[in-house]
Amino acid sequence: MRTALQSFSVPASMKALIEAEIVSRDAVLGVNVLMHSVGVSVENDPWLCTALAIALGNPESGNSCVDLSALSTLGSTAQTPISGWPKNSDEWRKILATHPQLITVPDSGVVAPFILDNDSLYSAKSYSEEVYVAATLATMLLEGRLVVVSGGPGSGKTTSIAKRLVNLMTSDTSAVDDVALVAPTGLAAKRMKFALANALANPELGIEVSPDVDDMIAEIPKSTVHKLLRYNPSNRRPYGRHAGDTVDHELVIVDEVSMMPLSMMARVLDALDERALLILVGDQDQLASVESGSVLADICAASSQGPEFVETMTGKFRFGEGSPVAAISAAVNGGNADELAKSIRATYPQGGDEKGKPYPTFRWVDPETDSQGLKDVARLVLQHASELCARAAHVESDVAISELLAFRESLQVVCAHRKGKLGVSGWNSSIDRKLGTRARGQWYVGRPVMVLVNDYVNDLSNGDIGVICSDEDENVFAAFHGDDGIRRIAVSKLPPVETVHALTIHKSQGSEYGHTIVVLPTTASRIVTRELVYTGITRAKPDLTIVATEEVLQEAARTPIRRATGLANRLFTALSEHKDRWPFKEDSLAH
Image (cartoon, rainbow, N blue to C red; front, side):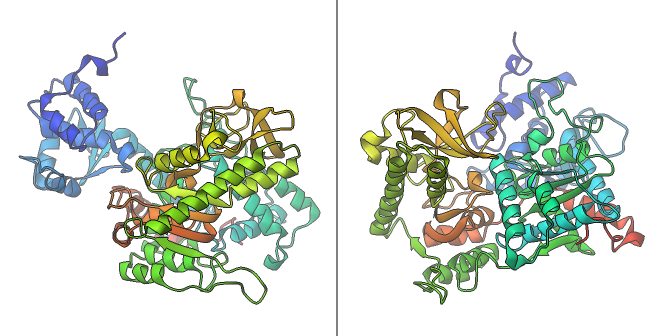
């Protein structure tokens, strides 16, 4: 049976725009169906189709809306300038105003698939989600049910959450004992639980915890956001938790919020009980979601416009003074290309400190001029992979497997691109080829693998990383860290996985590695942004190698992600309507 999209072909007037990657083929076909339904021809109104197709394809671009001012310059900045492209916002508004069946304005009472809010064009879905998220966050802030904590790696976020959690669980007036820890990925959720346990056990932090409370915190469930919401794509209503059937927890803590798209934040807020408390944690400077929206950055931007409600952590507990990671990440994050050039050439302390602790190591390799350096890095990665193969053979005890998994995390290549010689595929194929007979077959012993989908049967999450192992009887299995220790899963029962001698910087979010090797392409790319490079560099704990030209690094530092979204202004406006309640009343989530 043919679908509506299959019944339509791409209009001739749209083919050049598709080839120029201004619009996607699927978005054009979708808009073609909508326009046809109201008797409008794409050929007669190609610019209308263009604007609506860009808005419809926004989740892929990361934007929540189409800014008409930016849209006006898009035709001239394309690799091949587009003839006849509308030159300003007024021209685009006139085009959009001609078809009220397709485009309406807020509060018009007219139901349409697109909404034009001043100079921002939304799909109706994105608009409703943004309005809902802004209104709900504002309400929760004013009621003292929301706390937002932002800061870089090692800035003190986990310590802040640990102290707040202990206070909430021991309060005489509003004790909380039903808590959930969640994150966009299973790996990030596990990291959060581990970091929280370490913070509570660290005597230097001075967090006093009774045995009973310590046991309660140890029992707090951690999961992905999807699992919290009981997501099942095969159901008529995919999300089992929603306003009509809310989650059972009194307090929900969400980590790595920078990775959450707008639609997922809307789902989480919709599923909370009206009395539930929410703590959002993340690093606003890291990469935003691969889908539409930049929720954490927008929340922080709204906070910066008025009485600040975001708790910004500025500690330097992971990267101390003189740390190459601290210096380089600060230069990148500050967009200071000159300082970045100095920091990658600087001389950093070597050896160890007075306590015998080794200083972090750093190496910068320009792949175009330092061929020996590139060979040295490749040799180091191959040595690590070879040792992984050796250690993964004939392992029996959980202790040995735990040590194996820890060794795997001692070095990781993270790349900006998936394809190319300096991309993920290039590194993985090169390492497998150089491993020779040791990498023979799909399930070779020592193969590091990343899970690509959530697998609730095996209790594996998208992003979990394990190693293919063999026991004394030559039985081959995959080993992963689990909630209750080591998990061993027969390779025949594994969900889809991929090899990860190297992985993308996007997929490295929420992780940390003893030695992180950040690899960028040799020419500037639109995806090599300030946030991407900052995210890659800050995976290092503590050693760092950067494989990139100086020009690409500097261009990345000068190129922050700019997403079209109205959430920050919408949230600030919603709060401004209650200035009599600013600063917010003492919240129930206070320290």
